[in-house]
Length: 537
Image 1 (cartoon, one colour):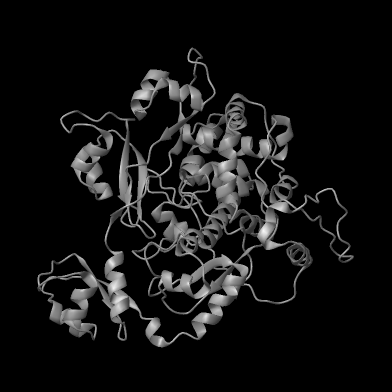
Image 2: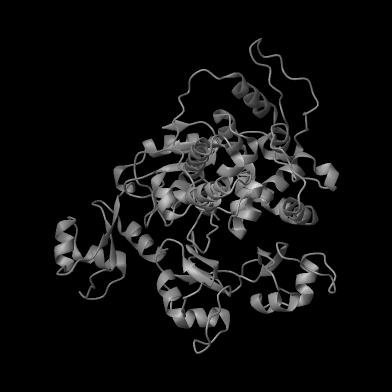
């Protein structure tokens, strides 16, 4: 089933907290185009999709006189479209000034984030406009995840909108071995906007309270409001006693809105994103191998996976969703190609958890297959299996080639050297360059260079510093890897054993990744590098 409404240039997406997100499965009928859709189609018809960067900015041109009822402005750049709808009041206080100064000093960071946002920003803007929500919300994924669909926090928040598992489930985002709806751009955007609408209503239309609650939870914000109210103090966001992260969260969003609304004031030139729909959604009604889908429409499988980061492994989940975000012409082509596929190419695979008392013959009989097929699909020699482990069981009609491909895709491999990842470090009371450099195993000279500072320049609590981390030792899967490098901040009561159990890794691995020894105590606030399978946390 076709769905129209999606966002952007099919570019490669670089791997880039809060607790929320949403699931978008909004079916759109192909009924009459409204005026805004007519305008967008007008632009798409005039632009060569192969050269979108050459679009002329037409923000100063006269609007098309499409009807007497609606005469909306057409924008050549999606940032211009966003700028025209930013309405939050920007206060002048120190918390906001600190965040704005950091963004203004790091235009390269903003442009990197914009490149990650390029495929998806148009779609997000469209969804926000449909609901009549503040356009500032389109900037929230910058604060949450730097527009990295694979971003993962120490509290298990994941995706562009950084949902934690419980909140994700509450808003309909499935999470299983095959699929994580928190990373599904369409599903998570719907869930995030649903959640933000609910929070806004809960806090009587106060968007700053709603945003703070999105970050730290509605209960915490409600208690802070109640505390101030009982004490006869102001209950506006700026007067509330909230966690340090939330204290910086709303100022970050407002600082971004201020900079994007008037980039010239900060001598910035935003990376241009054409205001044209280039992607569409296609729904198919059967589990499908991602490499087969990519082959049917002649695009690299890595490109298909980059546009559809919700899929954890090599195929869609047996129960779905079977939805793909693709370049418009490829979406139509996939729908047509799948209709004509022979049934044997759409074999359903089951991930079976071995139970106590199971044997290969019993499992084969239950799934109407043979022991040999199960052995081949799972690279098993002999008959020994262990309760609690998993087997991949192909449906009837699976070819030897399909079985061999699935077996091969389960083998972990070392991936190519990755580019450094930038993280943001919030300066704490008592911090200095030397302590921060030791914490992240980098040099003071590098920290100073990355942040355009002088070595004798004072730093202050609340200041944001860029720290670059080398990912060259990452381990993962060569195709659609699921192992990612994440940062974990040690908490009071943590031990290496507890952290290893939480993330399903070994203590020796944690020691190796961080060059530490288990005989030394961990310190609260200490940051550890972990290489974890994002499908298992």
